[in-house]
Amino acid sequence: MIKAAGSIAGIALVLTYAIGSGLWVNTGDNWYRSLNAPKWQPPDFIFGVIWPYNFIVLGVAAVNVSQRLSTGWVITYLSIFAVSIACALTWAYQFYQPHNLSAASIALTLVAILTIPLLIIAFKVSVGIGLLLVPYQLWVAIASFLSWNYAKLN
Image (tube, rainbow, N blue to C red; front, side, top):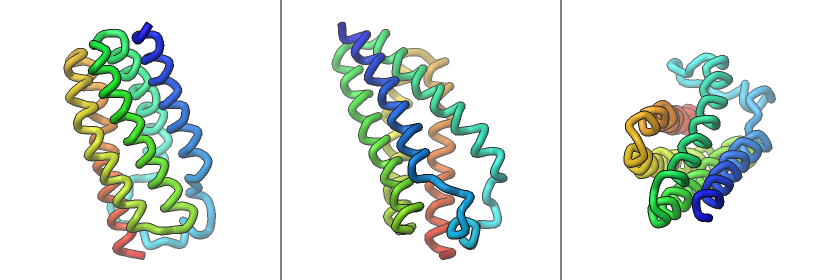
């Protein structure tokens, strides 16, 4: 029962993350385009490639954790994942709505920190699942650094 419930909860969290981000993130408006961007900002197409990968891998990891680990590990993983998604959505909202770049950067830094225990638990499932999540960890770490740069430059 926990395996199915955990898998469903994990997929629901990923969908919440993807849909919630889409509600607030808007890189095409004049405000975003008027910001002073860090010189090392990745090109736009990178974002279009990495986010679908991240959402798919997050779903795969959540299902595998739910199917292969004990109830305690599943609850721990999904709880940390839920908090990290709340922080990621806080970043999206703070950055693109009230334009509070410092609060957004704090939220995204928390996502990067919270991803570390997710990686550790994913590696308990298998090295392969853990390795699949490494690009997400790297991405949120780079994105938090990028966010702090936006806050500093603007």
